Amino acid sequence: MCGAAIGQVRTGRPARYCGTPCRQAAHRARRRRVEGAQRAARLRDRLVVDATAARHLADELAAALATVPLPLPPR
Image 1 (cartoon, one colour):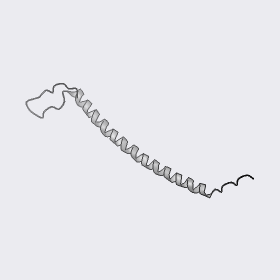
Image 2 (cartoon, helix red, strand yellow):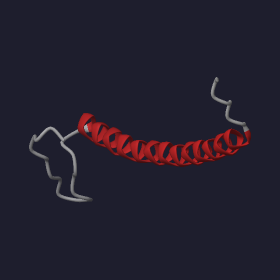
Image 3 (cartoon, rainbow, N blue to C red):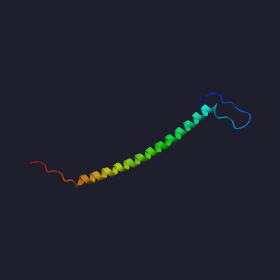
Image 4 (cartoon, helix red, strand yellow):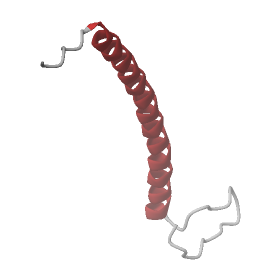
């Protein structure tokens, strides 16, 4: 994350991070990406629901206005 050299040990799995702060920062960055994608999906779903409701209300309003008689022009 920080660009510092990553120390290698003789045995075990190779290190991916230079230390605990960088490992934690990487974890938080991954979590933010996942949570951001989930939030975007929820907002997109909500937008679809709201747009559908708005279309239904517009249709109901048009139907209601069609039943209202127009006033006669004054003489």
